[in-house]
Length: 179
Image (cartoon, rainbow, N blue to C red):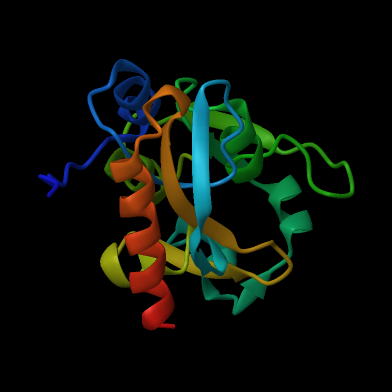
């Protein structure tokens, strides 16, 4: 008994849409630790890759370590996204504490990949991006020691209705049945 409408949110729109009630639920990458925002269980977990310019020295490698991020410029997520998510996706240091140069911010995912392809920096992505965003100017290299990128549903705490929980349970059941 729900009317489900699918909308694509650009990176900068996700949290404003949730907070303003524009959407009831959002499928997003974790972690999101924000006051007034709840999250469901992890629905998808995938390997992390690094999007690099096709002509970059990393482009021909099979895999990289997260410590290699200290040698590149990391493009940034918009500041409308939670700090917990930005720290996970675009850290300022490697696990060993080496600084990672920060680069330009992109408002959309397509803009992010265009900046990568133009040589302005690199950006960590999930394994699915290789399939759905194949581009001649961008190569994807596995980050072999990075934790998986996780996806799940987010909603406003004050909008945790029975329908929101039922949708989350149905999504979990659907994904679980296809594993």
